Length: 133
View 1 (cartoon, rainbow, N blue to C red):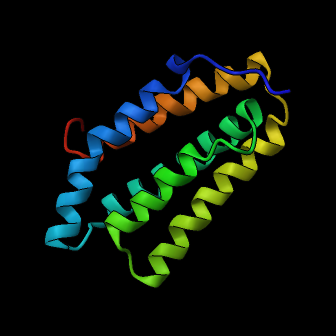
View 2: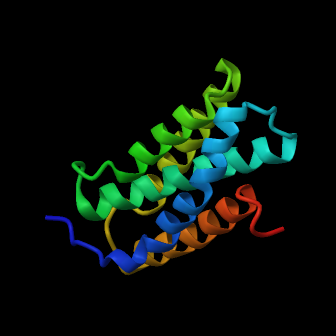
């Protein structure tokens, strides 16, 4: 049985995604074109969400779909064109696969890697929301 992790391990990334959510919603409503830098940030965020999804499955079990649900929400809000959607999904899957290969079991190293992914995701989300350079 997978060991349950304390919520504080994923809280930073969750907070970052929630902080960025109003920006995503506003973008979807106004539907402005994304700059290449913003598009790359979204790709990077999708990768980080994939990493986080891997850690959650490894440590909490396959029932935990928290980060897959968040990724689907990002796709819904962003409503990317077909090519960009494929790029985002591919990035999510690449992040997931990289971490499944590197951390197939819920270990201290996997939990440390999850904290690093959460910090990275928080920074990306803040930049997307316009709260950090």
